[in-house]
Image (cartoon, rainbow, N blue to C red; front, side):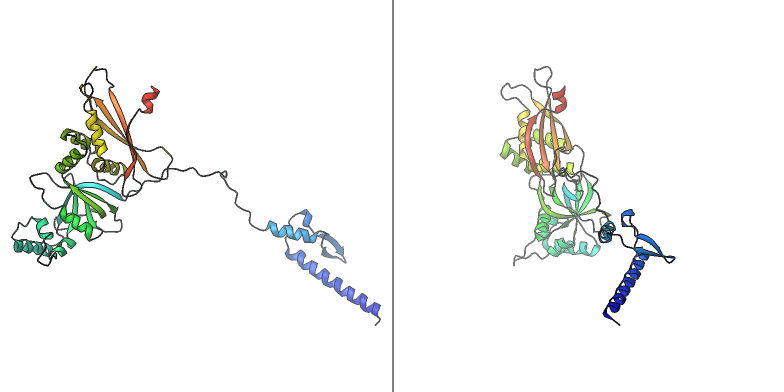
Length: 359
């Protein structure tokens, strides 16, 4: 066979292979559009697909078109507005009377035996649990560790407290100490977190299903000691303290809502409120009758903030009539209750409500 014949044979084989390849492509590849359709020719009664001139580019376009489209944004690409953080409902800032309860008869008998050994009353919980022996140890501390500690708010058992550590447990014991020369109850302020994972328990005293709170801080005082402290700081009288506490705790609260936590914090940790109320009671310059605290309103702040801010409005009403003074004076402050320890966000100051300004 001559060289020219070999060349023609090789050329024929290549064309045949190309034709078979294009047949396979025509069978399996989808036809995307008219621009990518193969040119169909009839040869000896058989359909043979031949690639168009731009076959490579069409295949590239076809490959891209098979990829999933990027999801389109339904909102414009603008910075997100800062909104107020959603309130939490697991923080507690509550005020009540702390009392021990025994979960079983055996523990109660152990306490009774300890009281007899110390020659004290079986109701003298503080002396027994706080007792130090000659080696400066607490032999009955194990009883305190197993006692069920109940916080009663306005004579209603509300929470079962679980001390976070030994330091908090010692504060629990201290709260049981009877104040000298006073018949007033010791008020304990509890700062903590509700334990959602804990189940209900039944004590010997019958406290069933109380909400459990892990106490991270506790301080206690009587109304007498609160009065003495405030009098030293501000010089306020007893009636002022009563007015403020009545305004902040007009209805018994459990200290679990944001509003209740803010009010309880101000009642026991913000002496400026008592000083303002004391100043408003009487106009020192004219000696005319002043204003008394009539009401306290709480609401969430409408300012854009990532924190939970509670606005409190204090309404002071004029005691007299037709004395040329304003019938009402308004004061405002705000408390940040984002976390379990509240704090004053904006200090107490006089202001004019927008509704009155519009009128």
